[in-house]
Image 1 (cartoon, rainbow, N blue to C red):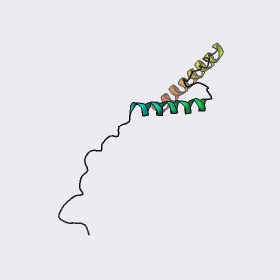
Image 2 (cartoon, one colour; image 1 turned 30 degrees about the vertical axis):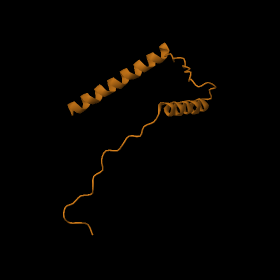
Image 3 (cartoon, one colour; image 1 turned 90 degrees about the horizontal axis):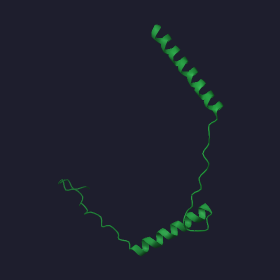
Image 4 (spheres, rainbow, N blue to C red; image 1 turned 180 degrees about the vertical axis):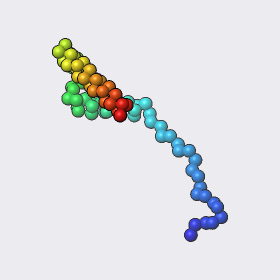
Length: 86
């Protein structure tokens, strides 16, 4: 049975932080860099970033988007007028 005298479980003190040497951190970081390089298929340890060329929007495509937005807003305004008038 549980004690009924109101005693709570003993409290623990703050946890002690584990220390890691700078050498150990360096070894772990280097190993992780090697793993990432293997995943990316790179031969070196430093990642090189290749950027994709930016995509351009043609004038015709931009015009189609603008016209579609105008039609959409006109329909929304028409629906708002119909619901307000009813």
